[in-house]
Amino acid sequence: MERKEFMQHGLVRLPPGFRFHPTDEELVVQYLRRKAFSFPLPAAIIPEIDFRKLNPWDLPCGSGGEKYFFYLRESKSEQKKGRVSYQKTRLGYWKSLGKEKPVLASSQGNELVGLKQVMVFYRGKSPHGSKTDWIMHQYSLSNSELLKSSTQGLLASSKEWVVCQIFVKRRSMKLRVQNTRHEENHQIPATCSSSSYSCITEDLSDEESVNGEEAMSKIPTA
Image 1: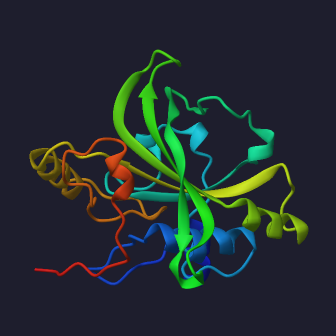
Image 2: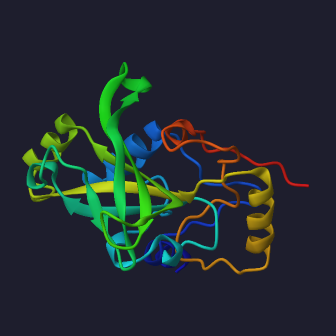
Image 3: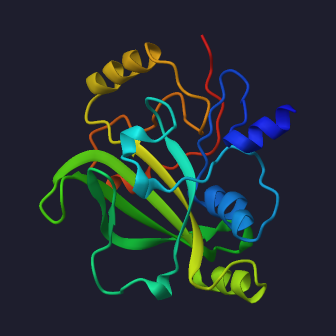
């Protein structure tokens, strides 16, 4: 009964003091690739959400921290190439920042297994929206991995799974303290994975925020 509830809500109850904070490689190899190939996931902790129907602050992932979800999008072959990528939402849009960066699997001889795209959320209509501090890291499988999936008939060639991480870029330690106090005063809905605290604590540029990877770790409790 409990496992069924986990699967329905995309949630696993981690022990006190632990948080879900995988590296890029872990997200792609252990979660995204398994999702694309219909393999069992390590934990039922990442739900399926169409983020285009919601604004980032409306995602059912709690009031703060990092938010993870799977999204079924049009394949790259179906998307227009050579243009800035926009993903519209109810009150704004996500805009791609820079080029996709490779995700390598160290356990497989640094094989290319995925790509990572950084996106920034703008409020208003494109291309004249107001830039916000909401950041998305969108991970997709490499072409070789997508080919394996399509040849096995696991997914239509016009669609592909991606896994997304959304968080608010912290501009200062003061802002982080304010957000932490805000989180303590609001109950976090048990409908999506969300870290207790964001690992982004410095004033980082959008490009620098790409390098904020940590492994799933245990946070000491007081």
